[in-house]
Image (cartoon, rainbow, N blue to C red):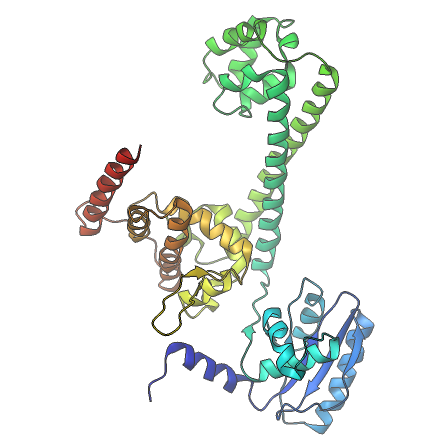
Length: 438
């Protein structure tokens, strides 16, 4: 009888862990609960705890050496619930010693508690036993912690995201101050934190400061900062709006102090991101398929660092579905009998990976490709833009997976390609629909 891909994968996972001793671990911040199960899924010894420390890990290692004497020819593997970050030290300690780890999702453990003893009672020995049994039944995922270059890229991309979030916060706070004390400044610049605007905010942030400045000298400095790109008319307009400004003047000294503080932090964030980008480029040179990923439209060094930092080595994945599932972008169905329920993404994966895939796809659909066709079709069915982008992510992942596996650069579509013609027709339909709606 022919089995589906899902059924085949389930059988493979059960066979993979069959006839092995399972070391089931329920981790926590200070202590880990351990239960060791025989190949018949029967406890070999009483469940015990170890400290989350080097001493605790060595105690477990001694226990495992004793088990090896009784079962010399049977391989031992770990099954662990990946809760928070408390399990990582244990993983890397024993991974260096040649042990394989399988991850049992916490959701599986939670929903299996009542099956174990007809109650939802939670305790560490019970959870450790459930983790071992679930692993034996193939209800696990492969451990995929990044190592080497990919571990460095994850740390760098996490740092980049943290700094970006802080900069957004500082940006909003500075805007709030300008809204109160100099709202006219925001209308003069398309980006009120561009290089020239930041210079002006650091030198003369409020109307009273501008009226005290030598405008000719200020204009020369602004032209130097902007490399003569800025229109000199803006500086004269700055004085004009300063004279008629409706900004409040109470508390202006402390407002100036706060604005300078946020501006300094924003400048520091930009400098730190430049330093991170240098390191990202250095590490990406060590990844053989970086040039192929850079050939994709809308993809840059930071995007690749974030992707590889979350996924690890893309060559380890067997299919596009594996990446989508790891990101939590696989679909959940709610069907029963003749009823067909709604479809939605599971979100049971890495949220940072979902975020970066969304951002990269957002740039990718601006170019002529199958993802753009999918996006336009979704928009024509009145899907919101966000949902249309999420629906198009799988097409970007397919293209990304192909260029990596086949080791070739992305080749854009020719203008005469039938797909391009179809995209143009969809664009015309979308514009007509948008005009009618307006």
